[in-house]
Length: 108
Length: 108
Image (cartoon, rainbow over all chains, first blue to last red; front, side, top):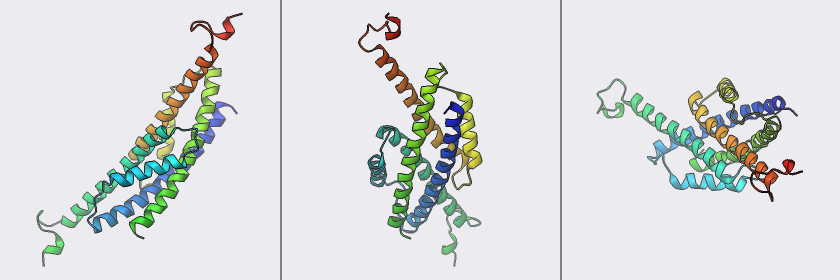
């Protein structure tokens, strides 16, 4: 196989990666909603450690555990940022149209 | 679904991501071998731009193009590092047992 043919393979893998990452993001967003409902913290260092540990367990190479850890740290960072943005958006829409200290469920 | 159930889904997705990333790595390593054989540069900014463009094209959300770009920049970085390490390892094994300035194909 020449370089162009390997790149066709990489492009197909990248499309699958995009799809899986978006599926993962939908799960993280669902967890974000549950966390806000239960007043749980968005940042959970123990869960993040567990994710990285499981990634290393699943790794059969050729990527090193360290390389995968770097990639998954970025994935986790981006998903946590989305959970935070969603939380802010929800708070803003709850407060929308009301004086900033008065939330809709407090007005009656 | 509760948080624990969503996490079971995430863990399954992560195992698939690990497998796809390792497949992608094998492709990148094959390209690395071809590049060294053809004396081509490991860093190819135009190809990297193309990868990021295609990732954005394939993106149906909910991840933003920007979040995916951050994740793929990390993936590309790690794979480029492996191509470089492989190149060094190959040069080292070629030079193994010979004075550092003398490569095996130069000794006869």
